[in-house]
Image (cartoon, rainbow, N blue to C red; front, side, top):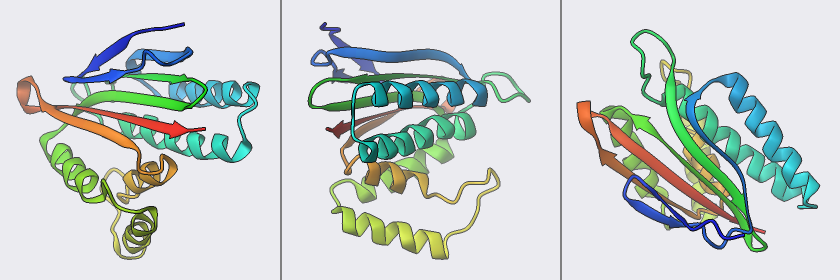
Length: 183
């Protein structure tokens, strides 16, 4: 089955090679939905005979991505946690693809750009060192994050990701990130 390509925030991600688009979603992210998606993804991977180690790594990647949308995304309703986003999860005989998009604040866009650009192209050993440094010396944000999720995602995807941050109306940014995890 060929599903063509998708255009997320100005990046054309070619997912036409996927033999199966397993799960897609666009709408409000809640923890109940996220837990359901994680369970569905994990069950699907197990049903395909994918190695447990790969399933565990991809599970960690998906949890970080989806929970970050819920925790750090811009709410669409004042005073409520109604964060809109979308994602595509698919796979072929070469690997797994996970692409996600949501709105972020200008402050978060700056933090994402700084951290993602600083680790892109690094060896995994160097990312692990940065992770450990942040774990020991970092601080907890008012939203409960320690800034470790980006490192986890980079490690679990073998630092194989592409991202964009594009300004949109009202001063926000559309953040899109796509991970390719080889099998």
